[in-house]
Length: 376
Ligand SMILES: NC(=O)c1ccc[n+]([C@@H]2O[C@H](COP(=O)([O-])OP(=O)(O)OC[C@H]3O[C@@H](n4cnc5c(N)ncnc54)[C@H](OP(=O)(O)O)[C@@H]3O)[C@@H](O)[C@H]2O)c1
Ligand SMILES: *[C@@H]1O[C@H](CO)[C@@H](O)[C@H](O)[C@H]1NC(C)=O
Image (tube, rainbow, N blue to C red):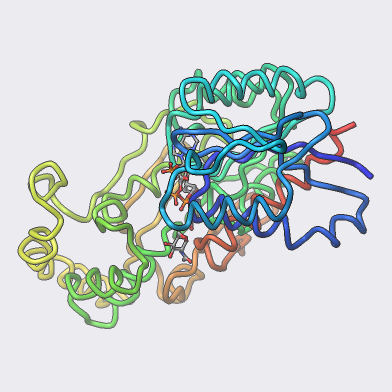
């Protein structure tokens, strides 16, 4: 039986779903002679760690309890110490994480799994990579800060996986990597990488007012609590940057031209979210409707896409042929069209659900299994 030691950072929707997947896949993994040994779980304030990281683990009953506590909105600090595990709060928790990485990284091996939504994990991730640990990310922030951080984090690319950062569980990164490895030059990538904006653009195409569509997207739970977090395009821009960097482009987030679907004067610093929804949004209806109609008169549709070409990095609304994979897209699916020498006349198309705790966590779990050969 091969044992893979794992530390899960972040215990929100994705982190908890990952722990549930790990527990429910026990017999499947056992058939593959593999055991995922969860030695630590942390949230924003604290870390829970097995009393002896060489021989012990947080057992399944306890992992389920951790998930239950976190789903009530409590901190891990509400769990008390036992013979099996110890609880640490910051800043001691951070030191403890480095201790574990130092102990296990070069001996049994250790996978750090970033399921947080924080830009603060990057410091820890860079350190643990140096200590020979593996890193799996659902979190986009560490990959989208400076180029210097990116290169440190990917100094040993075989030890790093981040499939779920683009298109959740969809095989986007792995497909791009295979094309790149085969030396097939990629000329163009265009994709709809926000379920929220995919839904919004296909609904306004049917003639519904933009403001109504955004509000119903919010009530369906498709948007962030403040829909401007989706409408700003910044989340799509981070995904575009991750793809561009994978293609070898040494660029930063501000190299990407991003179109926000609301003007600066309706931004989060200028207007509370209620005012935006009630008074701001309806002012945008007419402009969106005119663009939809103009596109339609050209036989086209509007999609909010990320576009990567030779030296073009854009995130925003584009007019696309109705009869293309992106033009046919309805609802909240993600779609990525990749054009290369081999995929020339017809692009390679990857489509499916691009969000959700379940598919995202499944992508993370597959990433963890994918690095098992690096463990002794
Ligand atoms: N949900 C999706 O559909 C989806 C799809 C693709 C990618 N992702 C990415 O997956 C990540 C997780 O998403 P989510 O929806 O699970 O987020 P979430 O529910 O907000 O959970 C974030 C978790 O990270 C913890 N955290 C914050 N700062 C931390 C730090 N410095 N160190 C360790 N843990 C920290 C939080 O702790 P507290 O509990 O103490 O606040 C919380 O438990 C995000 O980066 C997101 O962009 C999500
Ligand atoms: C993901 O998990 C969070 C936290 O449990 C929950 O609020 C959210 O509704 C879940 N999202 C989906 C799409 O299931």
